Length: 344
Image (cartoon, rainbow, N blue to C red; front, side):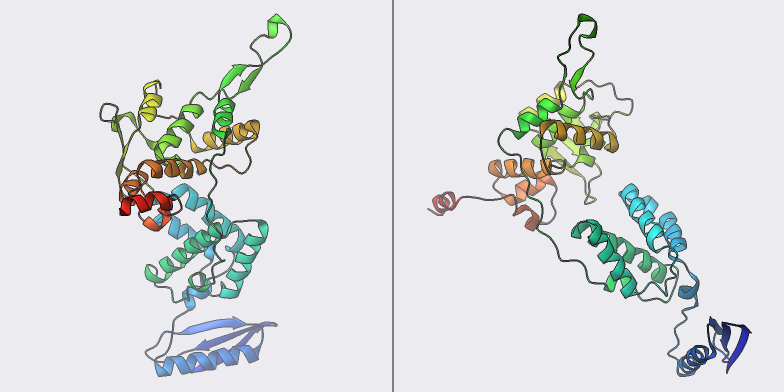
């Protein structure tokens, strides 16, 4: 049976008790809303259509994020990136309970992110993470709640980046990554002013990335133990798609590696952090006057060059690590005249 009781002005308690069923209760601002809710709950309990939403009513998104981070996110390969995105959700939506985190509220958040200038692909990935968090609540914690994040419309996909190095840009970039003395007056100041970067690892890192099409994270994780200069291979244990692969090295890539010192304490070929690369890249592209060039664009450039040498998409995918051959179509542009010659 249902009971309605005023706790204080503006707070009315609705409670429903049915023998053999869980007791449910909720506080409302007025008796009318309390009575309507109680009637609906009593009907559900008696007909067997009852969904126990008490946990969804109490559980805050910020608390769920903490549980998800501890159980799942902290163990992901993308733990650092995922943590940043979860922190944003904690700031923006953390005060909402799962019950009040509706499709409309999440859609509002999506539109706000796009208005800030976030790319459609970025927002789509973020919504995917939020959906995973709510799925965790449903499957692991047994919370009865609609996965609103999984039902919200994703922003329309934008055209993938196809930025390549234009004529002269590679040379300008490598010059900007060099380190040389600038022109100054006075013998005492000779060599004190530098032009370029003093980070001696950045230039060979960029050269190596262009030669191999390896992702930035893969290059930074590469260790000498997995490099075979005689066989001209570099083995990657941990990649973005979760599968190990062995990358064949061109003669230029081997030359880059042979010129490197092996002083890294942890055995890494390029002992740099992602943050250090980010800062050095930003300064170098600015010095070189290169607009809208991301480090990841080097992978596109390298893959496009490799496609000219390896027209077989299966072979090309084995080098680059793409699991979806459709992604490689953006790099493979054979001329019709060459295809006609193959046809005989």
